[in-house]
Image (cartoon, rainbow over all chains, first blue to last red; front, side, top):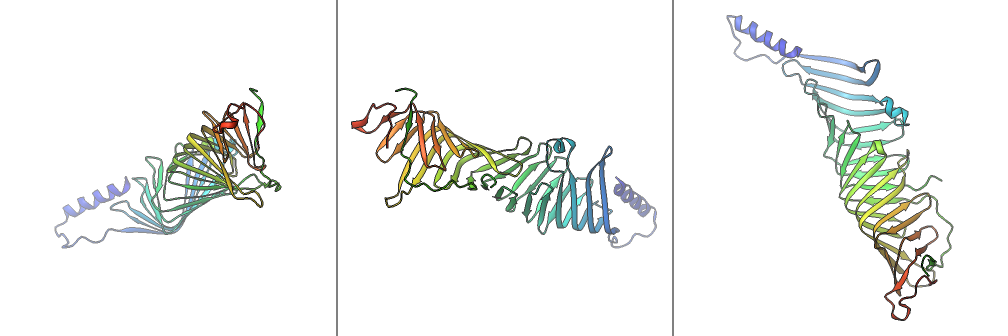
Length: 176
Length: 161
């Protein structure tokens, strides 16, 4: 909401001026280095993010983050049933709009869970309003007992449901 | 002899059981339901474990915390092919069909039910459940009826090699 007010303010100031510039100046940006974010729900930390560099456009609200590391902490219910305590997502570059809750990560997105699961794909997107993450590039997931390849994925984060399309799974047998 | 166990050809191979054998699963659409620790496979399902190939219309795989399949249930036009290569003999195969097949990792068995039938090079058996003991390379069929071989037709529940 803040960028919209700033844009409105700038527009009003511009209308009051007697001299209008021939070409609008480039929108001011905010650059953050070593940006860190914490997302809490009540007292519980849901996510911790870190990026080496963040650029933010005030006029559109679009942002870009470089060398992103995002840790998602498991829910209490997941922990209670022995689920993953946390998942680390990394990407060289992420673009998105915080107001739209849409993020595109690219350059090689990697996943690592505390339970030992790993994943890799070239690009992935996250759409917060729908609770959906998706990727159209080949995805490779592997863990202690499996190795899985698929041409893409759609993850419904609200229901913890992962649609992989035509997939190839190799599950190892009983642990020796 | 209804209800009798019909013991079928145990292959000559007596290799020791292998503990860590991968299971490969392919399908047109795989959906992982993490909360239920299962994966649903739809369309052209193919599961391969060593010398056994199972095809079906759909399947549900249950997995443990490490992602290892503990149980794989194949449903709809289930077809099983087991290739046998007895030492010093020509390679053979037995096939089986049914409505449902359940692979259990703990016992390394594949249990076929629902209009189940088994075809071997010289005979055909109808009966269920048909159980493949994958590590031992043997098959049992409960209450099976031997069909498809004129001289042996109507032999019910007798041991057969």
